[in-house]
Image (cartoon, rainbow, N blue to C red):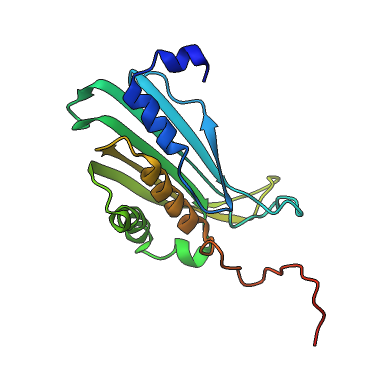
Length: 202
Protein backbone atom coordinates (compact mmCIF):
# COMPACT_ATOMS: atom_id res chain seq x y z
CA UNK A 1 0.00 0.00 0.00
CA UNK A 2 1.52 3.34 -1.05
CA UNK A 3 1.39 6.54 1.00
CA UNK A 4 -0.96 8.17 -1.50
CA UNK A 5 -3.28 5.16 -1.42
CA UNK A 6 -3.32 5.19 2.38
CA UNK A 7 -4.09 8.92 2.48
CA UNK A 8 -7.07 8.47 0.16
CA UNK A 9 -8.65 5.79 2.33
CA UNK A 10 -11.19 6.52 5.09
CA UNK A 11 -9.73 6.63 8.58
CA UNK A 12 -11.91 3.78 9.91
CA UNK A 13 -10.74 1.52 7.09
CA UNK A 14 -7.08 2.34 7.77
CA UNK A 15 -7.60 1.75 11.49
CA UNK A 16 -9.21 -1.62 10.80
CA UNK A 17 -6.26 -2.70 8.63
CA UNK A 18 -3.78 -1.59 11.31
CA UNK A 19 -5.71 -3.64 13.86
CA UNK A 20 -5.61 -6.72 11.62
CA UNK A 21 -1.81 -6.51 11.62
CA UNK A 22 -1.70 -6.40 15.42
CA UNK A 23 -3.18 -9.89 15.64
CA UNK A 24 -1.19 -12.82 17.03
CA UNK A 25 -1.73 -16.26 15.53
CA UNK A 26 -0.28 -19.74 15.98
CA UNK A 27 3.49 -19.67 15.29
CA UNK A 28 3.12 -22.35 12.61
CA UNK A 29 0.78 -20.13 10.59
CA UNK A 30 2.24 -17.54 8.24
CA UNK A 31 0.01 -14.53 7.52
CA UNK A 32 0.54 -11.77 4.96
CA UNK A 33 -1.36 -9.38 2.69
CA UNK A 34 -2.68 -10.67 -0.62
CA UNK A 35 -4.52 -9.03 -3.50
CA UNK A 36 -8.12 -8.33 -2.42
CA UNK A 37 -11.21 -8.53 -4.62
CA UNK A 38 -11.89 -5.19 -6.33
CA UNK A 39 -15.63 -5.04 -6.97
CA UNK A 40 -17.32 -6.31 -3.83
CA UNK A 41 -17.10 -3.04 -1.90
CA UNK A 42 -15.70 0.50 -2.28
CA UNK A 43 -12.69 -0.52 -0.17
CA UNK A 44 -11.21 -3.96 0.43
CA UNK A 45 -8.19 -5.59 2.02
CA UNK A 46 -7.16 -9.24 2.33
CA UNK A 47 -4.82 -11.47 4.30
CA UNK A 48 -3.63 -14.88 3.21
CA UNK A 49 -2.64 -17.55 5.72
CA UNK A 50 -0.97 -20.92 5.38
CA UNK A 51 0.49 -23.53 7.65
CA UNK A 52 4.27 -23.52 7.34
CA UNK A 53 6.21 -26.75 6.86
CA UNK A 54 9.44 -27.38 8.67
CA UNK A 55 12.31 -25.46 7.09
CA UNK A 56 14.49 -28.55 7.42
CA UNK A 57 12.19 -30.75 5.39
CA UNK A 58 10.82 -30.51 1.89
CA UNK A 59 7.07 -30.37 1.47
CA UNK A 60 5.92 -34.00 1.25
CA UNK A 61 4.20 -35.00 -1.96
CA UNK A 62 1.51 -36.89 -0.06
CA UNK A 63 0.70 -34.48 2.74
CA UNK A 64 -2.32 -34.92 4.97
CA UNK A 65 -1.78 -31.67 6.83
CA UNK A 66 -1.78 -28.92 4.20
CA UNK A 67 -4.05 -26.02 5.15
CA UNK A 68 -4.50 -22.44 4.02
CA UNK A 69 -7.04 -19.67 4.11
CA UNK A 70 -7.82 -16.06 3.39
CA UNK A 71 -9.62 -13.34 5.30
CA UNK A 72 -11.09 -10.43 3.34
CA UNK A 73 -12.19 -7.10 4.78
CA UNK A 74 -14.89 -5.26 2.83
CA UNK A 75 -15.65 -1.66 3.81
CA UNK A 76 -18.51 0.56 2.65
CA UNK A 77 -18.59 3.96 4.41
CA UNK A 78 -22.30 4.27 3.59
CA UNK A 79 -23.09 0.89 5.07
CA UNK A 80 -24.80 -2.04 3.44
CA UNK A 81 -28.31 -3.15 4.34
CA UNK A 82 -27.45 -6.82 3.87
CA UNK A 83 -24.39 -6.46 6.10
CA UNK A 84 -26.18 -4.51 8.82
CA UNK A 85 -23.01 -2.44 9.15
CA UNK A 86 -20.06 -0.95 7.30
CA UNK A 87 -17.40 -3.67 7.71
CA UNK A 88 -17.90 -7.18 6.40
CA UNK A 89 -15.35 -9.97 6.83
CA UNK A 90 -15.26 -12.95 4.48
CA UNK A 91 -13.27 -16.04 5.44
CA UNK A 92 -12.25 -19.12 3.50
CA UNK A 93 -10.34 -22.08 4.95
CA UNK A 94 -9.29 -25.31 3.24
CA UNK A 95 -7.47 -28.15 4.95
CA UNK A 96 -6.55 -31.73 4.18
CA UNK A 97 -7.99 -34.13 6.74
CA UNK A 98 -7.52 -37.84 7.34
CA UNK A 99 -10.04 -40.44 6.26
CA UNK A 100 -11.42 -41.11 9.74
CA UNK A 101 -12.23 -37.44 10.28
CA UNK A 102 -13.63 -36.99 6.77
CA UNK A 103 -16.04 -39.88 7.31
CA UNK A 104 -17.46 -38.41 10.52
CA UNK A 105 -20.99 -37.17 9.73
CA UNK A 106 -20.64 -34.55 12.46
CA UNK A 107 -17.56 -32.94 10.89
CA UNK A 108 -19.44 -29.95 9.40
CA UNK A 109 -21.13 -29.18 12.72
CA UNK A 110 -17.84 -29.50 14.60
CA UNK A 111 -15.96 -27.29 12.14
CA UNK A 112 -18.63 -24.58 12.33
CA UNK A 113 -18.51 -24.72 16.13
CA UNK A 114 -14.79 -23.92 15.95
CA UNK A 115 -15.63 -20.54 14.46
CA UNK A 116 -18.55 -19.79 16.77
CA UNK A 117 -16.58 -20.82 19.86
CA UNK A 118 -13.55 -18.77 18.77
CA UNK A 119 -15.66 -15.62 18.81
CA UNK A 120 -17.57 -16.49 21.96
CA UNK A 121 -14.32 -17.15 23.82
CA UNK A 122 -13.20 -13.63 22.96
CA UNK A 123 -16.58 -12.02 23.74
CA UNK A 124 -16.35 -10.25 20.41
CA UNK A 125 -19.59 -8.64 19.23
CA UNK A 126 -20.52 -9.29 15.64
CA UNK A 127 -23.67 -9.77 13.59
CA UNK A 128 -25.03 -11.50 10.48
CA UNK A 129 -22.74 -14.52 10.79
CA UNK A 130 -23.36 -17.18 8.15
CA UNK A 131 -21.52 -19.70 6.05
CA UNK A 132 -21.08 -23.24 4.81
CA UNK A 133 -18.87 -26.20 5.67
CA UNK A 134 -18.08 -28.81 3.01
CA UNK A 135 -16.31 -32.13 3.40
CA UNK A 136 -15.10 -33.73 0.17
CA UNK A 137 -13.29 -36.90 -0.82
CA UNK A 138 -11.53 -37.53 -4.13
CA UNK A 139 -9.89 -40.54 -5.73
CA UNK A 140 -7.01 -40.19 -8.18
CA UNK A 141 -6.69 -42.53 -11.16
CA UNK A 142 -4.05 -43.03 -13.79
CA UNK A 143 -0.89 -41.01 -14.14
CA UNK A 144 -1.52 -38.18 -11.67
CA UNK A 145 0.64 -37.19 -8.72
CA UNK A 146 -0.62 -37.26 -5.17
CA UNK A 147 -2.17 -39.72 -2.76
CA UNK A 148 -4.69 -42.21 -4.22
CA UNK A 149 -7.39 -40.79 -1.96
CA UNK A 150 -7.64 -37.28 -0.56
CA UNK A 151 -10.07 -35.70 1.87
CA UNK A 152 -10.60 -31.98 2.36
CA UNK A 153 -12.53 -29.70 4.64
CA UNK A 154 -13.69 -26.30 3.38
CA UNK A 155 -15.21 -23.58 5.52
CA UNK A 156 -16.67 -20.41 4.06
CA UNK A 157 -18.07 -17.75 6.36
CA UNK A 158 -18.87 -14.07 6.50
CA UNK A 159 -19.90 -11.72 9.26
CA UNK A 160 -20.16 -8.04 10.12
CA UNK A 161 -17.72 -6.52 12.58
CA UNK A 162 -19.19 -4.01 15.00
CA UNK A 163 -15.90 -2.25 15.77
CA UNK A 164 -12.63 -1.39 14.05
CA UNK A 165 -10.61 -3.62 16.39
CA UNK A 166 -10.23 -6.44 13.90
CA UNK A 167 -7.21 -8.08 15.54
CA UNK A 168 -9.65 -10.30 17.44
CA UNK A 169 -11.27 -11.39 14.18
CA UNK A 170 -7.92 -12.32 12.66
CA UNK A 171 -7.00 -14.28 15.79
CA UNK A 172 -10.32 -16.16 15.73
CA UNK A 173 -9.75 -16.94 12.03
CA UNK A 174 -6.23 -18.17 12.83
CA UNK A 175 -7.56 -20.37 15.61
CA UNK A 176 -10.01 -22.07 13.26
CA UNK A 177 -7.26 -22.61 10.68
CA UNK A 178 -5.07 -24.17 13.38
CA UNK A 179 -7.90 -26.52 14.39
CA UNK A 180 -8.54 -27.48 10.77
CA UNK A 181 -4.84 -28.18 10.23
CA UNK A 182 -4.65 -30.28 13.39
CA UNK A 183 -1.95 -28.09 14.90
CA UNK A 184 -1.17 -28.61 18.59
CA UNK A 185 -1.78 -25.63 20.90
CA UNK A 186 0.99 -23.03 20.74
CA UNK A 187 3.83 -24.04 23.02
CA UNK A 188 2.90 -27.74 22.88
CA UNK A 189 5.12 -30.15 20.97
CA UNK A 190 3.27 -32.55 18.71
CA UNK A 191 3.76 -36.25 19.37
CA UNK A 192 6.41 -37.63 17.10
CA UNK A 193 8.27 -34.32 16.87
CA UNK A 194 11.79 -34.36 18.27
CA UNK A 195 13.41 -31.22 19.58
CA UNK A 196 17.19 -30.99 19.29
CA UNK A 197 18.91 -30.68 22.65
CA UNK A 198 22.40 -30.82 23.99
CA UNK A 199 21.61 -33.34 26.70
CA UNK A 200 22.68 -36.96 26.45
CA UNK A 201 20.77 -40.07 27.44
CA UNK A 202 20.95 -40.93 31.11
